[in-house]
Image 1: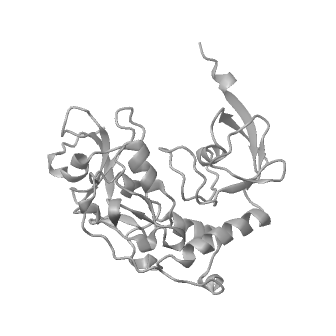
Image 2 (image 1 turned 180 degrees about the vertical axis):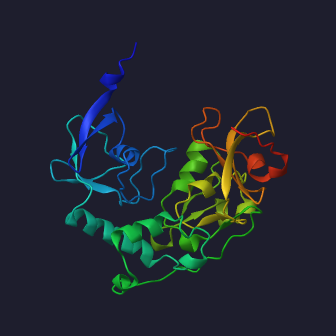
Image 3 (image 1 turned 60 degrees about the horizontal axis):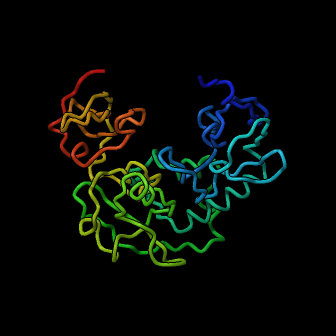
Length: 279
């Protein structure tokens, strides 16, 4: 019989003692305890990668470490806020924004964008970017997919879409392409999504922290109903977003042992076939 207490350690986050599960990362424990640490490349579906460098914290040795990669140890002491930490975060965030299209008010991800949340938290203003050479690369918006839009001018190269597509789904429809300043997320031979092996499951859209991947229909639901997809016999648990009794959004239930939050293209698009069961 497994002793649950033996799998727990105690750490301090900003001086407050916190119980944590062995093997968990500092960022995971912070999120679980409602401590905000800026981040862009973290996903509960994926192993830590440390791509964005925004989640830096300070350990008891005074070293800056990425909280998404650092595993908790008994007695560990973590500081999430200091002048040194924020100087690093602000520099990273400014460099990301410098080449990012700034049309937040008309962006489908407005108020749901993690980059917007990070810059607001760090207090970054437009005048802070005056010393940086702003240049938004002109990349045509890909509207070939019938269900979602891909706008690489808003991409921050966090790699979540690539990793979800490759590691979770095993489709390998997108990857990093080109080099240096020209690096971007691309399909094989840089073709539109409709001409790639993309299966239109929409998992990359759900995972994207910014407005680079958004559904073509972007109405926000007024309420959600938990139900089971009736398309096939797998029994995927889903949440239907309703507005005026119409289905405007579908998302997987991340707590479900059946589909672990994932959906197939049928669940995303064939909303007329879904039977609502109150849970």
